[in-house]
Length: 269
Image (cartoon, helix red, strand yellow):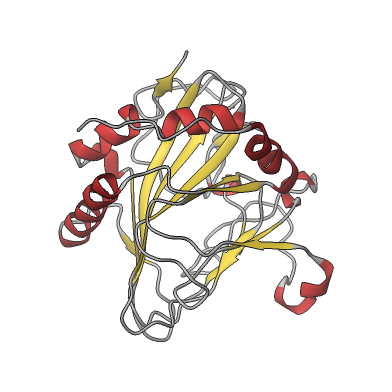
C-alpha cells in the first residue's frame, strides 16, 4: 500500500510535546489507511496472538489488547516501516534514528466499564531514555463517553518514575517505586489535556506522561486504537524484574542501544 505524507510536523507541535508531554496531530492518516487498520484490528480480535489479554475488570464489556502485532500481520509491518508514522515520531522526538519498541491494538467494546488506570508507560518496559513516546491512532470517533484519554500536562518533567499498575492484578508489578498519586481525588492540583478525536487523528505522548481514561459508556460505538511505541537515539535496553512481557528476549545487553530484531531501527541508524 502506498502511503502519502499529509504534511510536515510544525515547530509549534514539537514545542507542545516538549512542554506538555503530549500533542494531538489531526488527520495524518487518510480514510483508506484507517480502513486497513480497522480491518487489521478486527482480524487480530478474531485471531489474537498468544500475547493478547482481556484487561477488563469487574463490570461490563471487554477491554482487549494485543502486542507486537506487526510480527503477526504483514500489513502492519508494512505500515510501521513505510507509513508517515515513523517520520512523525522522528520529528516530534527530534531524533533521526527511530526504533519501534512494539505496536498494539487496544479496543474497548461498547459498554465496557473498565477504565484505563492512571499510569505512565515507560516503567512497564525494558527501555531507558528520554526520547520515548507512544503514538495513539484513533480508528473510531473518540469522545469522553467512548473513553478519551486524559493526560496530565507536564508530568513527564516531574523527575519521578511511578510503579507500573496492572489492570488485572494490583500485586503483579514489584519494582520499588512509588505508586501513582491519587489523581482523581486531587484533580484541582493538575492541568489536563483531553482530545476528542476523529478517525485519522492521533496523539503522541512522552513515555513518562501520566495519563488515564474512562470506560466506554457508549452502547453502540467501539473505541479502537492502533498504538505504536517509538524510541529515539538516546534509548537503551534496561531490563528489570516483573516488567510487561516482551515477545522474546532481545539478545542485547543492558545499556546497549535498542537496535535488534525485537526493537528494530525503522528510520536512521
